[in-house]
Image 1: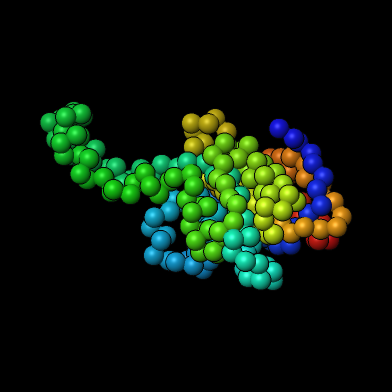
Image 2: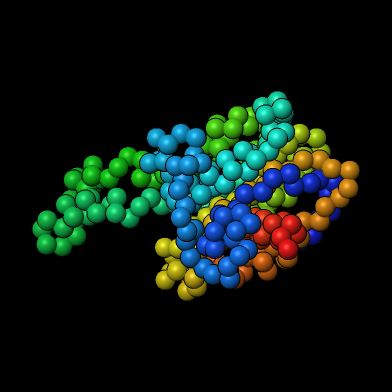
Amino acid sequence: MQEVVHLPIQISTVSLFCPTGQDAHALLSEPKPGSVPNFKARTLVPDRKSLKLMTQAVRLGVASIASAVGKSTVWDTIPASRRGMYVGASPQVGRHEDLLDAINVSFESGSFSLQDFGSKGISQIHPLWLVRGLSNNVLGFSSAYHDAQGHNMSYAMGSDGGWNAILEGAHALVEGRVDIVVVGGSDDLTAATDVLGAEGSAGAAFCVLERAETTMELNRHRYAQLAAPFGLLGAATIPLGMALHEFGKHTV
């Protein structure tokens, strides 16, 4: 996998959600692991009714893409079939509390009964419990909201997913498969801290890329270093570092 590439592209807009805030404001505080403060998905997700079908990681990704696309002055001028979207996102299980009713009815005999779980418990589980956390939900919701009908891909590969989304989206643009592309990733590992043995965080970052006459360097190692103080970010790691680097260039 390439670690550094130079391509004739430019970043036209950036969106960032991380434990120290949103966009350039995130650079005003010392980086730390954690959740995204004051995050209100309702203000950015086009269809509020769909929020109940999303995990927090999906909400972050959908909101970040909406913010990046919303800042673009070019997106709406490009035919839908030429708009690309490349996303890094990890699969997520639904909320654990959604299983409590099913587990409780399976304990009626005093100990957990697999038979009771099968005959009584399963019917207590919301039918969309697993659907909320599908790894392609960010891409699915966002491509529909923003009418991105061109080349697209979702990568469920941990931290490699975000980097692959950036690389493949950039190459799709340079090779003429799309005329504009959104690249980035989102994840939420805040509930996995005990399991992973390191502090997990939540975050999302997406960029709108366009072609350019001069080349731009994409550097995985640099982006990973910038994101490291925020803890484990999964698929959002490299995109978050890329966004921090871009905002940092314009912040004095």
